[in-house]
Image (cartoon, rainbow, N blue to C red; front, side, top):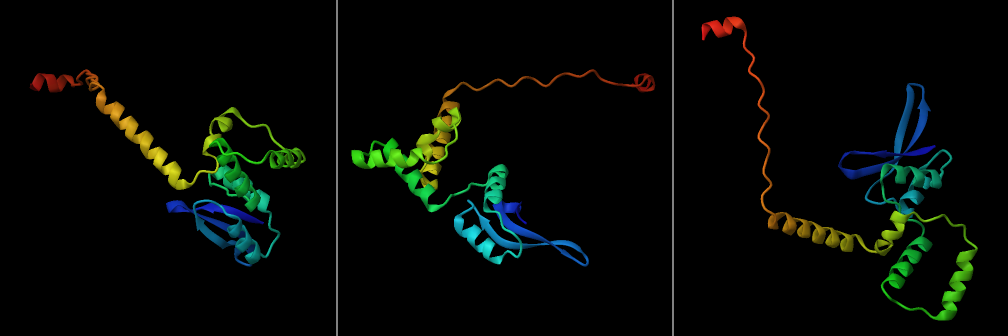
Length: 169
């Protein structure tokens, strides 16, 4: 069974455990940085010698905080959703066909947090990075415009001295 292993420096490995006469060992099937892509899963599955569960690896990646990029249909759905949220229009007949097709797919309830972040679905890492820089610049401007925050003086602790020490002084 394959599993994910997070290395230092942001690298993630898909590994496979196996038994040897000297005990359990593991071998790296794929090593990558950033998001888990379908190509990584394809390469790992081709190198695996044991049963390979893509869905289990995707679930584990989400638990580890590794971004998961889905199949190509997910990418197209993200792009379409992003364009529609930015005001793009599609033909009404296509919209009807999309609604009918989407009604046949299984769905999960969307949390309130995800609904608020929906405008970021389909944006590139570059756009997200620029937005983060803007937020940090705004925070810096706000922090600089405020009066300095007074620091509390350190707590004064009582002096400890032995009786012999007091007599000597």
